[in-house]
Image 1 (tube, rainbow, N blue to C red):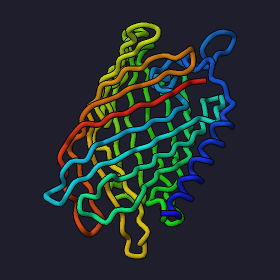
Image 2 (image 1 turned 45 degrees about the vertical axis):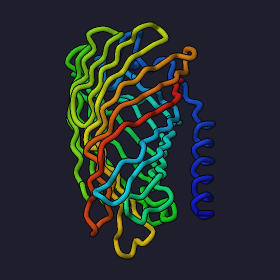
Image 3 (image 1 turned 180 degrees about the horizontal axis):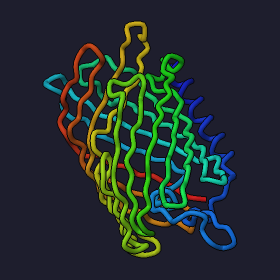
Image 4 (image 1 turned 60 degrees about the vertical axis):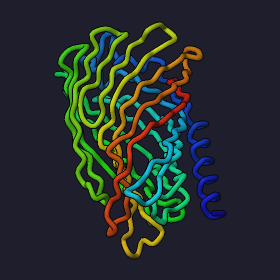
Length: 302
């Protein structure tokens, strides 16, 4: 347990340092780069619009539910993220960010689970843009994906490529593929559309994420959505046997964002989890009952 606490303290300290280093200002985050007052590239809802905060923290609670007649399983999830670098180049943009997620099982579902699991990565995203509205997005997320006590053996380098097409100012689409070298699901596809008939209304339709955002007032935004097949894998301490923990679920949710000022907002989210499975490599996956979840977070873009 003391070892776990040292790792958790280190992660939180590094995240705080990255937060303080985030001096890049994105005051024009909703506008593509311009030359002589005119956009260099066609406006793209996916590339140029940022409906989610660039910096934030969240706490999620998934209450315990029964697991295949083997007890119960619940989770507490903590998430923090920040963008600490953003650069415009001749043919696009480059962003650097970091994110950490910590999971604490509140009950083990009959499995001998570690005290805490961690995903902590640095993301490099490079958007290479064309004058015809087409963008190639390259991403890499080197980091640690492991039981907190097994971080040195949990390094991985997921990477991906996405093609994005802007059809007009309010309609864009994408198709992409992420490669996770050490996961059971090595190839992770994604595809979808983003449609925004007005500035106050936005639809993301696709896989693995779907949602609708409606700005009711300048201070209040309502969100409904779904996240399909959320799968996480973690290297375990006994890595010589190749043991890996796998957790999978899908979520349906509704949320309200309340603006605190021009930069910060609070988000309250709730919904249901379903299709839940947990297991260790070689032992098979155990099905779990669905149930509710609750999230509260704070975020901002600056």
